[in-house]
Length: 347
Image 1 (tube, rainbow, N blue to C red):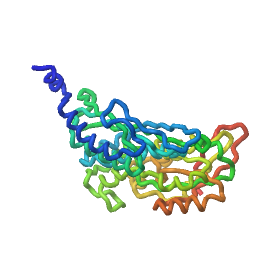
Image 2: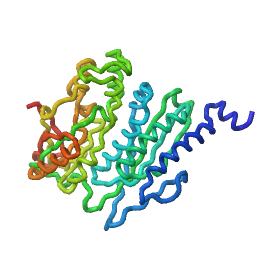
Image 3: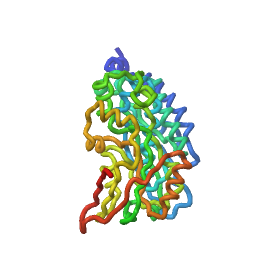
Image 4: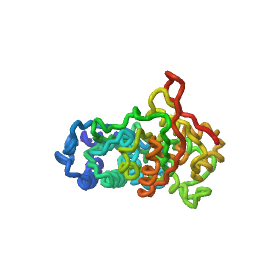
């Protein structure tokens, strides 16, 4: 037995990895923008900072799609989680006003299947092209002792750029500002551990079964792509005082991250409709309302904090991007010397 054979016998197949990388390289090449430098397949990806910036600041973020990959594996649909990964990351740096420049992905599996890796990266590449962003590189890892057969993990890192004096930090937020909520497209990429237990264990549904109240299958509902808010938000970035991407922790847990000390965000919890998905999860899972608010986005995937005079322009920009938006609350003065707070009210 050769050394290569021993590695294959241990569960790592180098020929399979080479085939996966060959397929992925073609997808990566199709995302290269005029800012891309270096060669596809190098040890590091390169991208040039665009011209015209006086004091460019790089904005970076790393994230994953969590156990949504288990739904993708059950459905045999792997490209949409690739889109999820990119859109989630774009939103995370959009919160700071940044334009995406480059992305890197990471796929780890027990047994690497070239066709599945190709599907995942096809989704990543599609979302990168949609944001005029270079897929600068990535990593595919085979770890049979760590992952069960058929399972994989997916993560990525993004690099963006913003002019230093235009970066959003939340310091512009002031009492009287209004909260604008942007509609989500479902769970996005958070809360899947609880959602899967409710759907597959408590409700005893299978991936192709109809999902109650939606007219869609379980797979279609649970694999709905995490929305990117770039087209809805970019045209009005100069009007915004802060942005919050609603991910794990819900509205309160994420909005508080972009508020300065001494203010309170008061959210009218009845100012937007819950999509049927969340009502079903709450009813069949017997989940308390306060836990629903901590775990899920409940139909609001991004929140903008804007001056009262700018509300109309911000909502019109969302409508032009075919994203529904609502006034969902306001900023009020908090107790003197207090930390920022978020309060959800039922009116």
